[in-house]
Image (cartoon, rainbow, N blue to C red):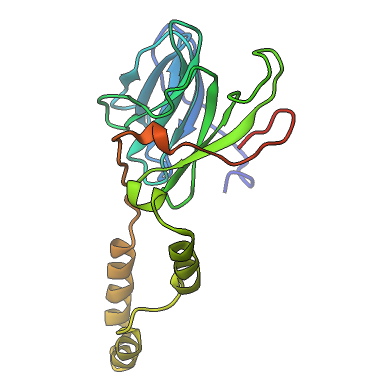
Amino acid sequence: SLRLSRKLKLEKLTESKSPATEPLFSPDGKKILYTEGNANVRVMDFDGGNDKELFPHWSVQNYSWSPDGQWVAISRYDANFNSDILIMPAEGGKAINVTRHPDADENPVWSADGTILAWSTSRHSASPNSNNYDVYYLYLTQELHERTKEEWEIWEKTRDLPPPSAKKDDADKDDEDDADKDDDEADDEEEEKLNVVIDFDDIYLRAQRLTSGKGMEQV
């Protein structure tokens, strides 16, 4: 392990003459986001290969990977020096503004299951210099946004219950050998692979206030 290593080798991954800062590994450790120069966001393989520009800009604050590594949320300033949060494919493509508000929206954070994006905002500050930030969030799909309180209560009570066929499946597994069990476990892991789904239509309208305290509240 790194802690027990007696020798460490430092290897330069970038070749640009501009500073390369703010490296951020993808959840699977295979990709790295970083900032080139003042604000150009780039992505490369963990070993420095396939380095390419992802989001060219002049003032990016921060960014974060979705838990499945397929999306990147970026906080950036616009020409009016207002910060918004955009989401774009990790492989490149169109960046969608998901906050669209005239006050500052910063520090995007994804929920572990990939259903929620949260951030800090100055939407309720008395003045731009008051440093009163609250936490906002939105559901990434319209279905979750429209779920009622009763539906959430049912989901809370039933989310950990096995499917109806689970008992029969458990009985069948008793007759399988160890090799078959290993194959089944591998198949289950493949089926449970996280896939973040985003409904972009009017996504900014789903923004909801989570905290309302005084001061600098961060996600």
